[in-house]
Image (cartoon, rainbow, N blue to C red):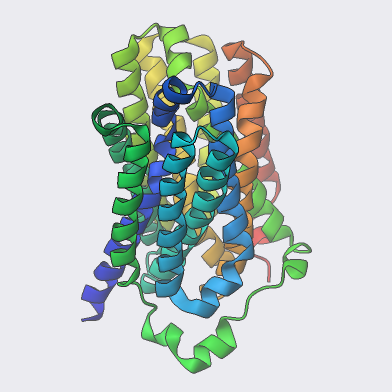
Length: 393
């Protein structure tokens, strides 16, 4: 019975992540919205950055509230905010109001993303104490799968029923899926007992985290890896067109494979981390990423170029999947929600810093050297700072 319950919980968590993962298909919305309302690309990209920003802020500052109300109610809040955010975005587009679009897509749906992201992860890893990396990776993999599915249905929908109507339809659909998934979430009985809630579930105060070198180490590990990965994602299609001269259809396929490797990396690397440890896995992310960016700076062969990008993206996705288990290793299963929520602010920061670094130059080679340098430095720091510093009591 317990084993069956585990997989029900995993399935519910995957459905939640699959729904909110549609945020990563946002670039598909840009051209239809631009054609309809003439908002330029830079204006539209800000709404994506806002959504990721509020994801991190919600995950960081609403975690105590999430623990108080429990996973079912937290999941329902995610469904409500995300659904209203998408439907409100459709209304903002119909009204041709960019500020309203920022409010609904950037802020309101971003809050839904935050609730929807931390709730299933914190629940599922508690059901799999023996394989937390695999469990977290399985759920977070669905986030990437959601982006692939959404990228395939958004454009046909907009061409068939219009942009605003597509937002309305998807808002209702995701809301219903997330409601069903949320009602299936529950914590293991050992965690829900009154004794465990009282003894183990008290959050770690932010003041204490800000004096803990382990927290800063985990935060910067996620921040630097995400900065390089999300910057690459933001320029993937035009970069490939300029460097390896692919056509529009090939660019769409290229972006689709990026989504696949983003999802595959989340499951693959999180499972690897269960075998070799989280510290070693993150060191590999930085070392492999640095090597791949160096190869990119020297090669314009289509196969080599795409392979390097796919490997980098797999490490990008893998870091998100391995981080919950990393936090669990460091702080324990009952204390992980608080530090994990604040660590996700690194994602919010990277969503702005990565694209900003890209904007500094139009020279792709310089960008690749910059990211290779960042990741090489981080890999060296991983070697210099011994793992026991992270795991110190």
